[in-house]
Length: 390
Image (tube, rainbow, N blue to C red; front, side, top):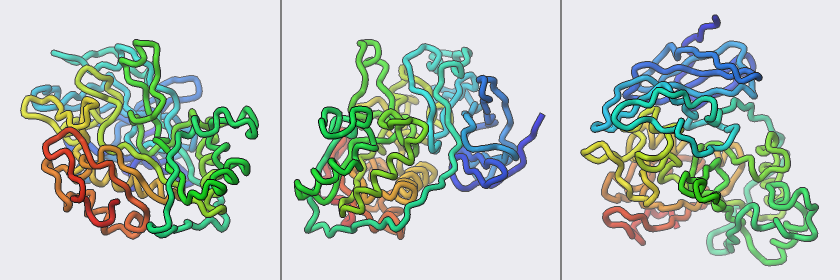
């Protein structure tokens, strides 16, 4: 059986170097991490990540290729009162996966357990992380850098914007491709706008309660994988990343910026009755704000709240934002429930993530917009965000 070599603790997630794939996973409280690779027939092959640097587990799989489907099983303490819900029966999405294959469908197999671990394997129904290789010809693309004083923003949903547009080919309506279609670009220019702000395009999930009602989440504010572009808006899902980049390039050529609405405040794992899909099973105590009784602080109203003041989670969020700018050339972000970014737990203008953004040569140059409320203490800090944040 192939064994992994130590590899490196950076970059985050899975990275292909032309000869193999380096895998990393943060978990401060894990005792063992298994990389689970799935072949074309869905057979699972498990490898222990052999090295740990600080709290980052890592390993290198020689011969690993783009398109490889994978996940993690994480071993550690089962101590619900302390916020620890480790259960290796649950296959977990890489929080830093650049692509995810499959959608979350409500199923009891995703539940981690109540009084004791649920030992049923979730792999047969779990979405899988996918290794990608970021090759794209941006040609002479450059950010418009429209001054704030001249900025006019048009907020839109990728599907809703073009789904009924009669001048766009039917098979293209409601997709990333349609955003860059000449008809749409001309329309946006005619309106006089300078920036297109897109509702969430990171891979998201429909909440279990909606699925049980026969409904789905249209808007996208329930993130499953923050680094991964959602393929449901692509003409060809396997080419979603290039379709999105083509649209950004076309909009930039017309002088139009692209701003993303991002949900860096909670995850699709919801409350303790919700599915265990990723962070809860990887290191619940680190990723989320946990109360003294082991339950979640629900400052988002969505069941959980990301602890963006934890050093590793700050790094995760910072690298995620940087990834969208560097890989997809987006021009800025609108932050949903933005006070969560500044919780320490009290809101602070000097919170770690704000400081990281301020000191970043990439992120400090893009547009940043805050939705200035959550439902925690001091939940409406209008005027208290750092100067870079509008």
